[in-house]
Length: 437
Image (cartoon, rainbow, N blue to C red; front, side, top):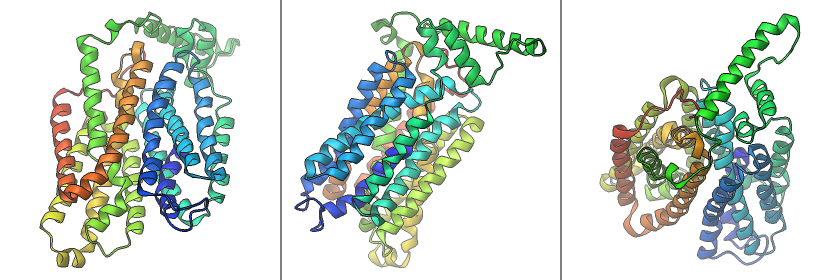
């Protein structure tokens, strides 16, 4: 599903070029205002998806929600194929946003609850791996496939996803919360690959499995997940500190430009007066982003979350400072003679941002939140995240146009340095934290 979500993100840029031209497959060229809404309405849909699935995940369960998130995405591709005017795309992109928001809420919680602590960081980081790979695939497919062929191919992915998750069990934490202890035991054995056989030869192994599950069960109930949630669970000093840290994380993720910069990569290369093809540069930067996220997957459970995140913030700030200074002080002749320099700086920002700021957001949010309020807290956090996606996608092109690329990059670098100081002082390491607390 995250791969499909990434393809939808990558689909946008080449498709908008087509839709704003005379070759628009379903009518007159889109205006600038219409194009901006096609691009940004996914943020509003994501906000809605965060709230909807935050409400449903503890009522219907993780597995049911896993099925539901595929449906709006499938409708998006159907509406894209059937579009007769831009209204179809508004509705379709909004529904794609709902699916995307559901992914950000349901998948991190599901993965965190079924994964062993030794691989939890890597598995959770794979979300951004597939979004990054999907974005590259979407860009390439939308560039080289016809408008009507692409939806027919991509709609197969959510169908495959639905078939693939049929055999998965509900998470043991959810089942324990709802008093289904026997099913919770089976689920725990399933995800931990423990034997529940009653044969004599395996009796010792079976006894060990029972002891392990009982220990897990006591840890879950000790985390208070079966108790009624009250306002006091949110408005206390430790929890408010956690939400403050999450807010700083979200600000860093979005106002540092980690999403908007990569959405407007071609425009940034034009601003830097490079003689290289901007679309080819965008693909190279996209590949660098994938490389950075893959490095994060390999390192997050070895080095920990904190050191990767802080390294990423500091490096991203320095890279954006370099881009701003290149725009500010380099002459047109220097840029023409050293056209590789702007590409190198953008690739550096892509890799270092993906190493922590991009890859670890969901991991750290899930691990910071207490088990009792994890579902609601994740929903609220992702709703805030989606709101900032909408804001960043709106303000970055305006800032670049009105104030210049240099001012925009100075602002982004300033956000990185500010968040580096705050999180360096207050963010705890969450590697190895029990998901029952």
